[in-house]
Image 1 (cartoon, rainbow, N blue to C red):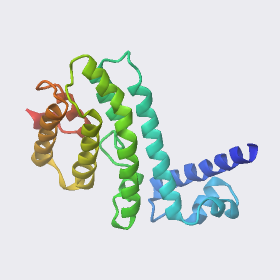
Image 2: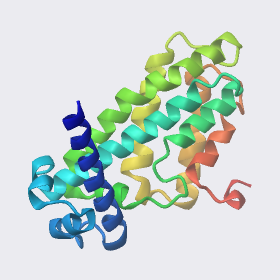
Image 3: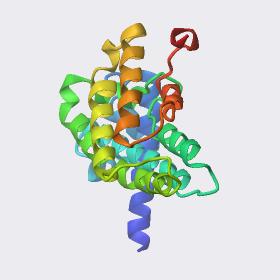
Image 4: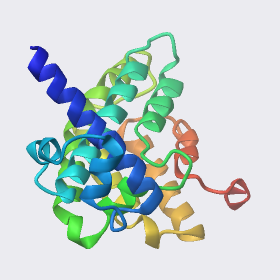
Length: 215
């Protein structure tokens, strides 16, 4: 057990060093040698865990997704928070660019050469998000906020739509076009979950839209 623990510690030290360097110098501007020096770990130890810099990036994104999902899970199970507020807070916890500025990991994931990594991230989120949100939706159904015979399937559709429209095409959606898509998204959320008009209006805060654009 001690050997396994030490291996995990070393692996995370490498990832911590790599993430810091990627944020400073970018992925392309960072070398394996720089990561080794930053981590203060023998070259052989690094290559024991990772075959290449791309493997390091892949592991970083996987760790990032796991962290987002775990944070969201903690909020989702807190029944002291009202349903709609809990739903929004959970979604905010899973938002990879909470300040509206995607970090280096998200930027790298969207590069054409990292398409497989991008796909794996989508699959991870599609598998991980609906179960987390399901408890909230079920609580909302008990309280009469939501009315749907297909809560889980509806969540899958929502995640798939967000991954495609608001993730894959995020750079192309700006201003009025983005606002129109978000309003359409909210409109359809109300129908998917059988919610009252305006119930999902606060979802707009997740998209970092300028307040004056909504007036």
